[in-house]
Length: 145
Image (cartoon, rainbow, N blue to C red):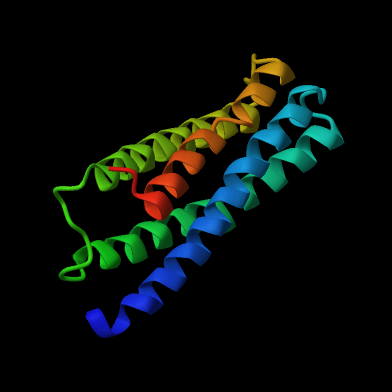
């Protein structure tokens, strides 16, 4: 596996970039969708955009991020499990996965015209993926502990 580690890393970074792009864009769509009249052409267009973004980009990108990240973790001698940074990174991945789950759940509310949250709520959540993203990058690059 060591021979393929750099490939795993490259594919992991590509997958994470796609996952994060979608995670930052989907709540922005919700901001605009929350102001659309349920059943309107605008609302129906947002439903299509949200569904396609989640199913065609965000979900597969998350799966590939996990697969290639897992392959990197499984490569012998790469991770020193006694270091704290890897545990913080893994905790932030759990947090990011939780945010992903919330975004997916809220899409179902919009799909069924059951959204009760204002645009301001989604505007706040639009920034949520940024926090774990920043922590993850610092942990991986700086490895402060």
